[in-house]
Amino acid sequence: AACCCRLMSPRADLYSKKMGELLLKGWRMLEEECPLTHDVPLMQHPQTGRKFSIAAGCYTDEMDGEMNGSPTPPTSTATPSPG
Image 1 (spheres, rainbow, N blue to C red):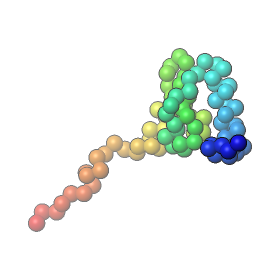
Image 2: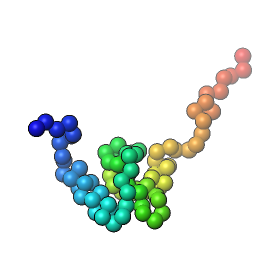
Image 3: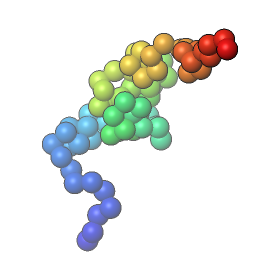
């Protein structure tokens, strides 16, 4: 039977194993995917509600600096010179 999924790599196998372990501990699998790798769905901590990426190995609130950088508007760097 043909499969529409990517071939399972050792890394994907490890991700699946880790997700299974967390699910057994009460974590929830979310529909959102890891914003850094786009490889795995995010997992939600059962008590705190924090979102965790198996692929990145950290919570999403810890990767803000990597994802967004400084919150400066894109137009702030382009200032027209007076004519």
